[in-house]
Image (cartoon, rainbow, N blue to C red; front, side, top):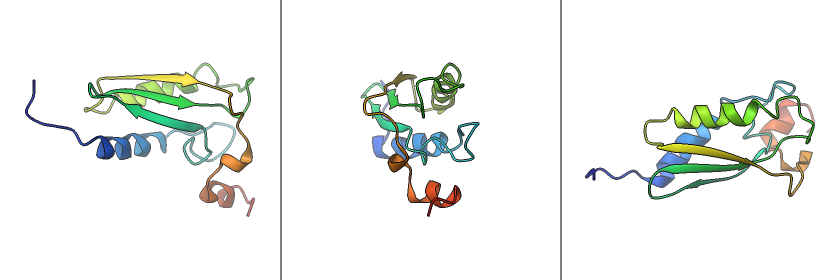
Length: 108
């Protein structure tokens, strides 16, 4: 066992930074600001589980976007493994978007 401990809050911030590099190809805003990420869990073994949604169940990137999220989060040295779970409960709405995303899309 390593003597070094990883600050889970710091790791959470790193994960969010990675998520902000992933964009929905149809909307020029990252998936975090779009409100597609519902929750990020990190356990004591540094396994990460991400609960996310898509803008619609028929989203054209439904197959590739979750894999991209998993791969980019796994690329962090501190992360042992990453898993993405897709949910449509609650369904995504524009209300989940950040103010920054709404401003970017001219909705404010």
